[in-house]
Image (cartoon, rainbow, N blue to C red; front, side):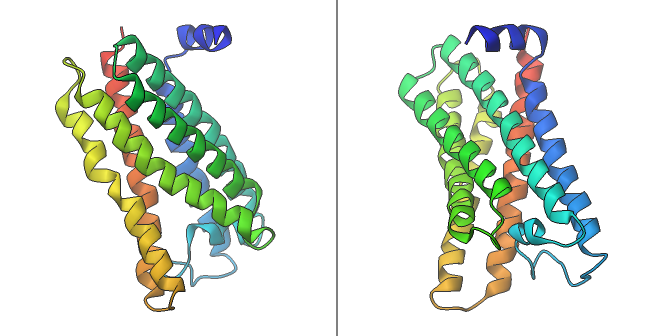
Length: 214
């Protein structure tokens, strides 16, 4: 923890959130641009995010590097956010559940990045489940922690309640898609929605934390 304390003294932890979002989005865009040089059919209703990890012309490598790097940066931001909440005497039960979910999401992101579905489908799917299910609990319990702090902006805290359900909607649609096979496009589209929702939430949290930091 002393190492992290020194790190946060030199670098505001909010910047790890911003940098994680930038790297994640940028790696997605670059991977997509490389991918469509070979297959122009790629779209938000025909291809899962994971398909970028199996893409041609090194698009999969770009995706993997971006996913693992962003996951590490997000974890550093979550640790910073957790430290703040504990210092503010937020309810420890909520904070610890949120941080546990953050660890799940981190592990999931690393799994998704390191194990493409074409090579290790079970590990990849497990990682994806950890990412989305972890975000649901992370956003929900962080929002609960923040909402009960007297000086925390209630609108910022409440955003998590609004955004947290989207990963669950995607996971439900994914199960429906596989059992039985019906509307594939809807499940694919909601995976992308859930991903962008997570990026929005992290960005908002990082922006507010930067605003209130001394």
